[in-house]
Length: 439
Ligand SMILES: Cc1cc2nc3c(=O)[nH]c(=O)nc-3n(C[C@H](O)[C@H](O)[C@H](O)COP(=O)(O)OP(=O)(O)OC[C@H]3O[C@@H](n4cnc5c(N)ncnc54)[C@H](O)[C@@H]3O)c2cc1C
Image 1: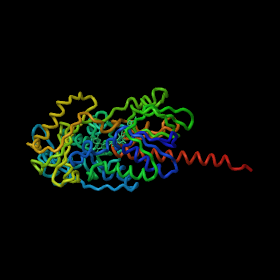
Image 2 (image 1 turned 90 degrees about the vertical axis):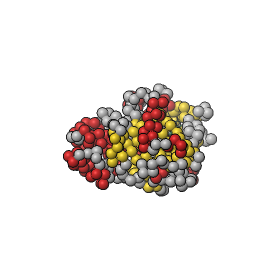
Image 3 (image 1 turned 180 degrees about the horizontal axis):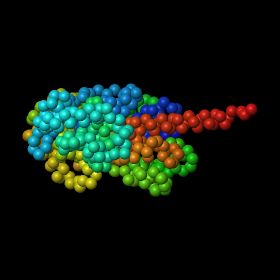
Image 4 (image 1 turned 45 degrees about the horizontal axis):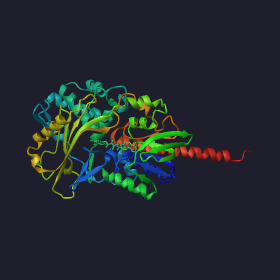
């Protein structure tokens, strides 16, 4: 492998691959290093017994930044939007979810007064500018706009659904409300899973001459001199780069910098808490109750959705792929067995007898959904991808000032690439000016 690169990208998930695809427009040598055996990070899809399982439930916002940037890169996104609605569960009672027009007026969850309040709150969300909520937590905002307990709990359900964050007393209202707005514009479940995005980005990168080295992790990043980083890989090889884009989590970045470099940003990176959850990903030969396609707990932070009803997720046409999910609070104690029971019991009540139809089943008790639980004021520390170390840039779902999840990963990947391209242009024009004869 070549030892010297213009750019090394650490991590082959959405952020890394989007950055690569923008950078191929500049005439620079690029290496992407991914520690996993396969590429894709958390956007990867595993094919098991002819079934395509995303790593937990994945829905792409139709009005989100990720979709528009992926479109800009020529990535085709085929799939369908799940119908709004389904059921909400509270204390063993089931109610139609007041998310679609019909259910808004018919659900027994709300009385007349609560129904009018809920409609008013939904209209308010549609017209609100989330920028005006930058100083509030989501809980503070909910207390301000909601009157009845029912409407407040519905807002928490929507917040979890749109962001996976289950800490309203900590999460920034600006980010949660902006994601709820985005979710109201609809989502897509993708045919073949999210790996289709990664594979297209990967193929385009390879065609443009990018080198990808998987199954290798970067152990250390040392800024050795101006315009030069030394990276030590897991096979102990040393490589050099002019620029590094790091798309790992903030704590992993700190470890790679090996405490040699005392970034002012370090303390902020160290304080970042992740958004986490537990996922039960399943493929069944059939659904015991085919009409049950979507459900959430009102107080219990649980989610269930049949993704294959809208996206092609198996090689045969008959089987069903679905996800059951539990949103974790950062303070939750994670007990593997009890969480698994909780998810399976939730599925039991929705699809009694599902166990006899299992093709494949995967349970992950504590997975990082987003590397950063967005807090008030985070955006000020994340305005630029550039770090204090010249040449070192950050990207990933934690690194974008105004977005999280795929929108954060994709937009920060694009931003890091654009900042590098701009930096190169500025350097080239400076050296051109220096070479001009002075009169
Ligand atoms: C259960 C679940 C559900 C989700 N649902 C949604 C959803 O519905 N909608 C949505 O928009 N988003 C969703 N997401 C979030 C979305 O998947 C992520 O935000 C996005 O994939 C993150 O991309 P990334 O590139 O920032 O990070 P990653 O995908 O984590 O990529 C970082 C890569 O860096 C690699 N790496 C780490 N350290 C090193 C190292 N030292 N050397 C080399 N490589 C390294 C990792 O292996 C990884 O591949 C969900 C995530 C999960 C887990």
